[in-house]
Length: 268
Image 1 (cartoon, rainbow, N blue to C red):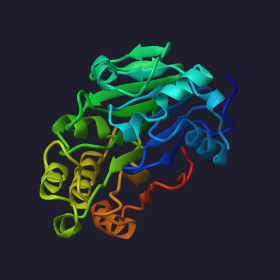
Image 2 (image 1 turned 180 degrees about the horizontal axis):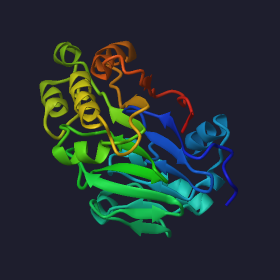
Image 3 (image 1 turned 90 degrees about the horizontal axis):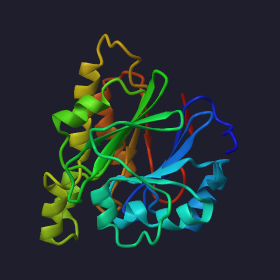
Image 4 (image 1 turned 180 degrees about the vertical axis):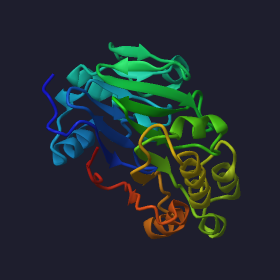
């Protein structure tokens, strides 16, 4: 596998939202996608636009079975011989992966390695079969990824401590959701403990994480990427303003990942 051209540890959102989700993470020798919820062709195009190629990928990690997270995983795996990392329950629940020869099963709570990248999956609260959040570590650096969760449990908070980058859900503005066009049952699903975090929920979560990171043993948070924003029930400006309140003028860089084009390549 060719080396990436990135500095030691990098993350770049390729797509985020109900239309599809995919995040590129790389070290000098290893590159992975976390989810592949666009078509295979579109993921290839977006990788190319940020100077990467599918041939570099050492794996595709699937967090849960919803189509906006798995749509392109099967075709990419077959076309480029990329292993897919997935829990057995999620694999059984996926209806559109097709035949995959390179499957590696993991269990939430059991860390594993993809080449030099250390992956720690943990259970989250979402209306899927066996949904997972992740931390990905390289040396002393750690990236936390947690989207599609109705509540931030103590387990989630424990895993997300001492990350340099957090890629975290900020799905909806509660007022926009209540007053929006979604049918009532769907509004209730979004607001539920197995739905999605609001901007306020994310602000509170970050405040707690920052409090826990005081005088840390490991380096502290440097970047926050807001993800999985609802196009109907949120807007990037609202999300950024609300979540920034939880960062307390700390100088942490704040980004908003979007659905239509890759975000910034963040290099640690």
